[in-house]
Length: 483
Image 1 (tube, one colour):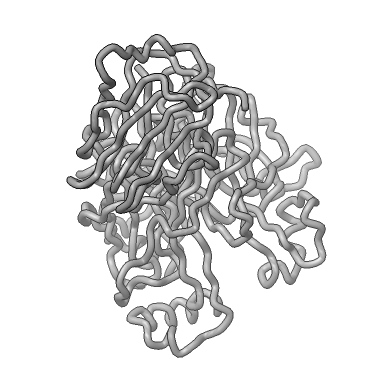
Image 2: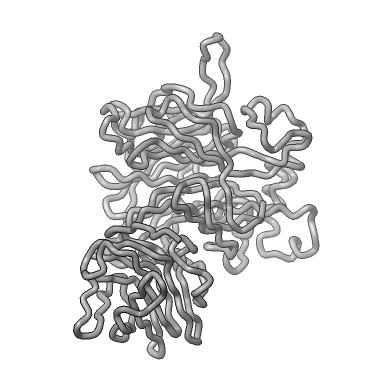
């Protein structure tokens, strides 16, 4: 087994990328965000039917959250924005870029859209100033043959408010979701919606949007999926490839919410899991949200009231091969008149660093509650704490694969009970202990320096292949970093 060179990069314990599962008894476990409070109410007329796809963008002025009110009573579809300096207090900018006399605070930035629109701030150093903000969404655009065709398209903006339709990106997919894109430090990457298991179509075929929608039985048989494509210039893209998950399961994922994690070299995602019951049952009729489900069915389409959604956590080291936790990362909670509905658990794209030990995450709830304002609810999640390796109440061990690090100190992000502990050892490639066990580590901290016994200097092993062993009881290990 060749050693993995981690240098000084933080390594997260969410999957088996670094873990020798044959030598380890600790178990990977998904963690859950903690719901805090409602920090904003979306209550303007165009927001009272439904709001989809909140998307947070950080720039040099603070934070913008883009969102899409749904169509109701003849209102035009649009994309709007609210702003914040700290992620806690949000406000609508009064823009008046587009005419909409019924809005007290006209915060519309795009007024002709078909479905989910994703916005990001382009960090590519070569990006022109008038394209620093890019929006990705479905639009009809002229092609060289003179015909207007639907495609996933790019809008550009210098300021995040005034957008111009620029160019098509791809026609391979359906795109009826939030299709995410960003600069990953080397190239552009885009995660987008398509379908497989289309009736009468070979799964290996890559279909464009018109071919997919030409299959009349698509909705009955097909599985919503996530695909990835790449570009050097945001104009010419590779053909989308289906993501591969390690759990052997194949179920519909409605969104992807994939981003680069800012504390470690890993992609993370929070896709919405689409769960459609085949028929109405007595259980659905007994649910607190039955009337909401029934009205959604009457206003939209029959399947709507039979669908519930939750959110799962996924992670990847290359963007194509993913570890997926099948226990929900976020669920609907105890039943009330507004939840357990198609549209629950749609996390806003992007996280906001609190400046402390946690990130702020957000949802917009009451998805199909016509006439109700929509609360923006804040959640907290520990840094690196989307998942962990845990020992439970007994003792367990985590042993890494061979690694090569750079540095003279080991820091860990961990949690124990008062009864719990973690002891750390450095092993050679053959598994022999070369350090002796560290001083007992206990408590709850995102950055604890591990102290070894007198006479052992971990820097002696910098640049050499070693393994790390963590013996722990009633403990959770989230990440480690050498400094």
